[in-house]
Amino acid sequence: MTDPVDLASPALTLSDIDPNKPSPARIYDFWLGGSQNFAADREVGQRIAEAMPHLPIAARANRAFLSRVVHHLVADLGITQLLDLGSGVPAAGNVHEVARAHNPEANVIYVDVDSVAIAHARSLLEDLPGCEAILADVRSPATVLGHPLLQATLDLKQPVAVLMFAVLHFVPDEGAPEEIVRDFMQATVSGSYLAISHGVPDVHDPGTQQDAADSYAARTGIPFVARTPEQLSTWFTDLELMPPGLVSIDEWMPEPLVEPRENPLIYGALARKS
Image 1 (cartoon, rainbow, N blue to C red):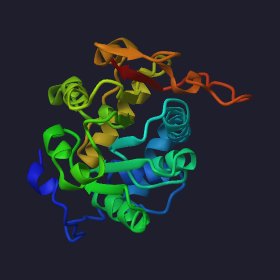
Image 2 (cartoon, one colour):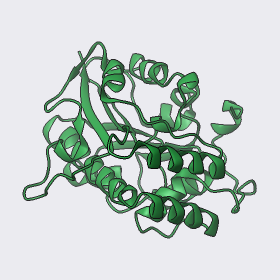
Image 3 (cartoon, rainbow, N blue to C red):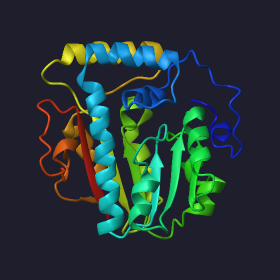
């Protein structure tokens, strides 16, 4: 793992960016139709999309899920502080945009390990007090939580929504994703929330999914681990799952007239800390 002190540095330089090394954040940006990606990202993204055409669709569905969750947190549940872990490259419907549409005073911290994602986010947030982007690794909760920009922006003595959208399936089992979840939530007070979306096994075509995951790992150096809903449910121990529970993201407070997909590959949930 990269030195967390370096990852959390408030200063940001882009000199270490390798445009020939694909990045999960920029591949995701490519699938969403964004422009903050390089040829290497587009090549990997296209190859995987050809093998599994539903993945770009799942990426867009995950973005819509994020929007619905943030809307519910701010508009309905009164949350004013949001910590977006593994935020990726900013795209339409960013967390701060959705949140501030309902509460202009909402504070947001974006966290990602990809320098391009953070540089783009910082440019976007330049004139928005209360919204910051930090270069850090979600696998080091203590470093993220101790970052000076986070400390200056979020009051951890007040409820916070911890958002982990499509990030923990890039953490292998030996990286103990359940401990990452636990450490972040232990740092929050009662009345805080946890939102997660995560890839699940493709029961209809497991071989193709595994081939795509192997190809992804070979080109990015980052594993993709699909986990069953039963495995994911253990991460919400001691938290109160909010309706409708841990379900396909298509089924989580869906927009009217939007039909669920036949083979959803991402599950999600929102839970409250009592």
